[in-house]
Image (cartoon, rainbow, N blue to C red; front, side, top):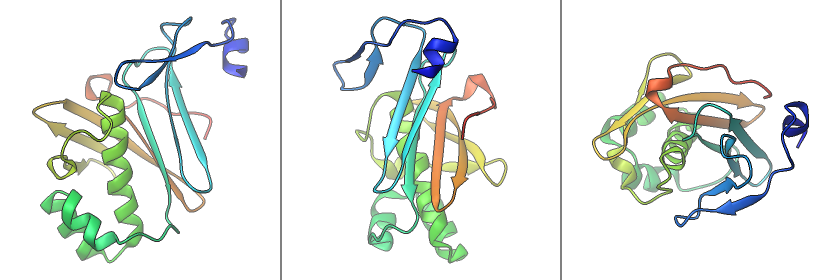
Length: 163
């Protein structure tokens, strides 16, 4: 709301596309995505990037990481997670997959193990898939939560503010 007021935009009117993805009906160039976990909420918005996705997870959440990783992680991701012995890396991979699919607009309608995260730095990289294209991702840590933002790779690395 403050963003709209500060940029002299009207109060947003929300609607949903056929695939369930929400959009702002009366401000067609304002794009957003949101996510929540048990303890926190994340919102990302852009006036320039149409396909943007975000996911947030609290790393203290208890899940059967091994079973989920075997089923949903790319073989290379599973191996890297096992070698790292770092449970936080599991949440990094998971949020990357969800943020990328949300950015594309599919939600979780693609086999997650087909998505492979390739890191270019400790907290950013890309995912490339024949069916959906190439997406850039950036991981942000806030306390015990990992937030991943994803958008089409052709925008390159953009600054993320307001964390």
